[in-house]
Amino acid sequence: MRITGLRLHNFRCYDQVMITPPQGVTMLVGENGAGKTNLLEAVHLCCLGRSHRTSFDKEMIMNGQETAAVQLTVERNDGRHEVGVRLFENARKKKVIYVNGKTASKMGELMGHATCVIFSPEDLALVKEGPQARRRFLDMLLSQHQRSYFYALQTYMGVLKQRNALLKSGDARQLPAWDEQLALAAAPVVRLRREACARLNEWAARHYAYIGGREEETFSLQYDSALSEAEDVAERMLQGLNAGRQEDLRRQYTTFGPHRDDVALTLCAMPMKAFASQGQMRTAALSMKLAAFDLLETAQREAPLLLLDDVLSELDPERRRRLISRIGNAQALLTCTDAGDFIGAKPACVLHVEKGKIKE
Image (cartoon, rainbow, N blue to C red; front, top):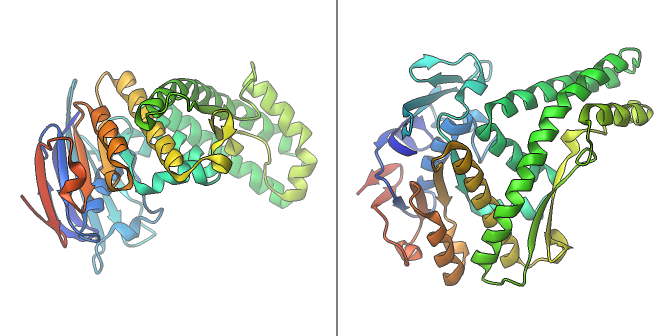
């Protein structure tokens, strides 16, 4: 997969910009705040329909403007794909998705046309923070991997919202019907998460051993769910909902189900969050992202786009060299404040970013 055109209009600090990066690694060099990360954010927005930095679309619109737009064109094994997103400052207007020149009626139609894996300093949250960060990692990865997962998750969250509203009302009479719907909706979400984690674990363990350079340190990634061992997920889900009904009514929200899932990360069988050093945590996060890259590459039979946001400066020289060697032939956009961070590899292109302007 290769970007053949990225166009931004009133997006963050860019009033109008167009870049056509070559195959290989494009290095974006500039001071902090120059707008380097905004370019990666624009690609991410076109791949997933959302930013990796904010939940508020209006934050991506240039100050003083009412709308912003991003358009991404990629060349894939099956031909050209063009996707675009238009954002509105007015919260009452929903963002508009474009796929190959047509307005998409559903967000899910965007998934899979262009795929990416992003590396950023915030990835440490995958190890240090709570389950929500790891669920988000899985959900965003699997939505790109299989569009059916995106729709399955939407269905589950929609039913969950209705059940929680019913719990808040205190009316338990309709709960059995909603329990059945929620149990059925949970099954595909759990199945796909379980399958993905098994494959991610194999790849991530190998990447950790290579990047960390310590074969004796065994990294493991395991699906952590009350439903992870269930043969019949829907039946087990229904049992869990029935058992927890009184507690749910008391708390006024659903306490059982895949919305409570986690991904357990261990190093030498010990929980990483409690025992790992900062360097080990960073290596684990990088390994998870490289495993995500492997999952998408295997499924698509071509490499996704790689976005590396000021990651190299966080690594020691040896880990930096090992990570660069793993990039392979994928097209990558890499940001840094110092071109010296890229010692050990030859970028195909160097672009200098200064206050929303791009120069070669």
